[in-house]
Image 1 (tube, rainbow, N blue to C red):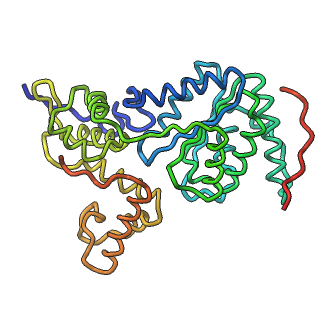
Image 2: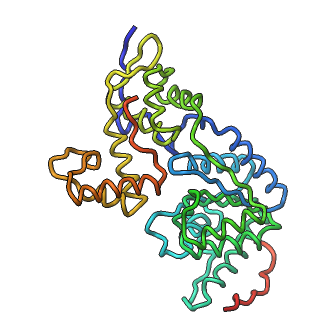
Length: 349
C-alpha cells in the first residue's frame, strides 16, 4: 500500500533542534552523566561540566534536558547563549544566564550599579559571587552557558574565579562549547577548569540506529533503506537530520510504502539548503561572503554553482573554509544569605 506522508508546513508539528518534543536519541550515556553530576551538586558541593561537540550535534538540546532534570531535583536554573559577533559585550552570556528569563536565578534588581572604573569588572564579579552564594544557600543553582566559543574574553576570567569561589556551595555549571574554538582566554579557562576536575561530556555523531529512531520520531513511521541511505549523507548530525526530514515531509518528498517511509523524489529539500546557508552565514565571515555575494542567473542557491571566475574561486575557497571552521557537514547527496565577605583586592598587574 502506498500513501503520502503529508507535510505540516513551517508552522506545523514538526519541530527540529532544541524545541523538539520527541525524545533525545543516542545520548543516553551523556544524559546519565548529567543526572549524576546534578545529584552530586545537590548534595552540597559545586561542580563544572563541559559539553563539547561540533555544530549541530545537540549541545543546546542537551542543556535543555539538563535544565528539565535540574528542575525535577529542585534546582533553580538559568541559561545564557553567546552569539557570534557579540564578544564585545562584556560578560553577556553570564549575565543572561543569571538575570535573564522569566525565572532568573537571581533577581534582576539585586545587582547594584557600577561606575565604569578600570577595576569595575573585578568588583562586579565580587557582587555576583555574593548574590549567587545567597541564592545557592536557599536552593541549588544550575548555570547553563551555551556556545561559549563566542563569549567575550572576560568571560574566561569570570568562569575561573566564580567556579573557584563558589566551589563549596551547590552551584552546578554546564558549559557548552565547540572544540578548539573561541578566544584564547576562553580556551585557557576551559583547559584550567578541566585540569581542576571539570567533567567533559563529548558529543559525537549519532549511530545509525539512533538516526533511524529520529526518522521514525519525525515521520511517524520507520524509514526505508533508500531514506536511511540519504540520511547517512549528513553524517549523524542530529540538527541536519531533523531539518532534512522535516523538509522532506513539508515538500511531500516521502511516502508510506508498506508501512515504511520511502523517498518519493530524489532531491534535497529547499529547507535544508536554506538552513545550511543561514548557519554558514551565522558562524563565519567566510560564510557571510558566500551567502551575501550571489551569482546572477545561478538560481536560489548560488553557493552550489560558483562562476568560473576569480570571485567564484574565492567563494569556493570560502565555502570550504567555513565548512571546516564551523564543522557543519557538507551538503548531503540524495542518498538571602551570609554577610558579604571582605572584598578581595583586585589582581595585580
